[in-house]
Amino acid sequence: MMKDTVSVVIPVYNGEAFISRAIQSALNQSVPPFEIIVINDGSTDATSAILATFGDSIKVIAIPNGGVSNARNIGIKASAGEFIAFLDADDIWYEDKLKRQLGVFESYPDVGFCCCDFGFVNTKTDLMANHFARFKDAADIIFDVPMPLPLEPLVGGNFVGTCSNVMVRKEVLDKAGLFNVSYKQAEDYDLWLRFALVTKFVLLSTVLLEKKSHDGNLTNNFLETLLFHEQVLIDLQANNQAKVQLAQIQNKYLSALALVRYEIGNLFYETNHRTNAFKYFFRGLRTVSTVNNLRLFTRFCGRKLIRSMSVRKVST
Image (cartoon, rainbow, N blue to C red; front, top):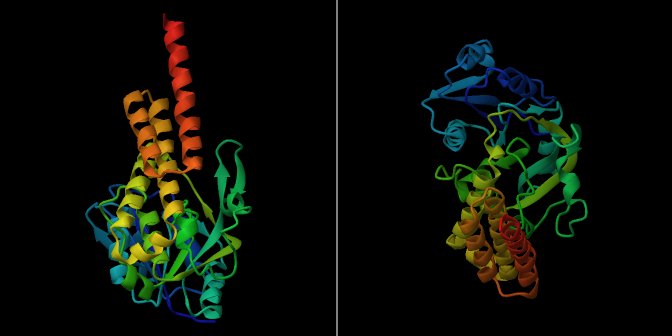
């Protein structure tokens, strides 16, 4: 087993309530990381004092608040490991997380990206659920062996799910670039798409961490997330590395973009932004000319038109 090759990158902002358990889960790995780099992103609470209690077991980089993507990029640039493993400050790794992922890279030298399954609390049932369970019937998503063409299923949605389950070869980052700091959300999805242009993926079906939630999670604003998701897909077309692969999956790519636009329209409608809603429904319709897309337009837009007409009748 390869050892002393993993740099753990942990960005934190005002994480006094949870940063200790995240760091401890990295320190408790059965295969210890080469280094743990914590980027204190301008915290104003007791985060700095808590980080100081770990002494030389972690490397702390304190910076003015610049957002999570900027913090991760600084951690990557400061790293010396052959591999980078990301850990969000409010998540917890299980003790064999690094060991299992290093085993993947040892078994498949041509694979540059590995993510694993993770558990999270379903807010509707308050029960633990597994992220990859939703993809068990997806024909184009395979587990525990290399996915030679990960771009095709990835344009259909961010099956990775979180940064905390990712380990990537440093050389892949050298080829694909770092996180795009201009995205407030979906910056991870953008990077995974660029990774998919240059390397194979392995998705480990084993649950190796717990994804935690708290009131400060940016992903609580789902409409904003979808708007950035749309922008990421649009920007992908302008990536010179993507042109050949996108041409091979053009219909799937455009269908995925159309679906995101329908979902944005739906959320605009539910938040009483009706003009924006119908703008996005028709934008989705114009994205790709297929029978299935016409069905989607009818489903999303038609239902909202019926609701709008019903409301008008009741009000009169």
